[in-house]
Length: 185
Image 1 (tube, rainbow, N blue to C red):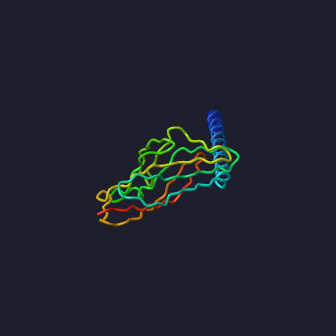
Image 2 (cartoon, helix red, strand yellow; image 1 turned 120 degrees about the vertical axis):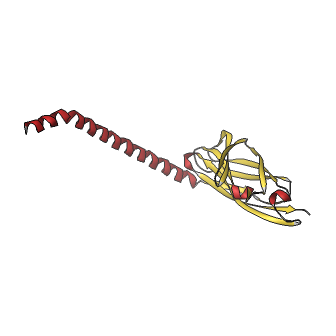
Image 3 (tube, rainbow, N blue to C red; image 1 turned 60 degrees about the vertical axis):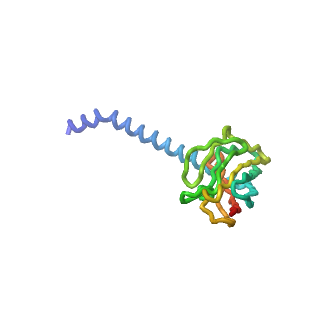
């Protein structure tokens, strides 16, 4: 029995260190959960006061350049930062067919390379929308030719998709788009 007591006494520092490590892990986990909760609460309060308007419904000829214009209105008392935007892949093309391309953006952006549901582009510098103000975004697009789009001659095809903006605090804003492209003979 005495040997068992001696073993426990010799292991006492290890038990003490283990308890301290477990307590610290619980504290860090709780703090992380609290920080995530605060971030989500802030994002929820900011989201309700953001309005994304678009003039994203137009008809163009094949090969023509056209602009998609968006206005992000921030009705919050704090500025919001816009980090990147994404254009729905199905809107740009599908099944080896190309409907349109992004030519440029204002403010300037660089393609991210990610190609999931959205073709993502990062703004060259983070765009800030001041408190109680608006910021305009313009994307210059170019409609593809009839052969690239796989369209029949003398047709008008309608392409639908979404444009998404990623803001700080994990907030996203989406706007639907509908472009009609007139293909010649």
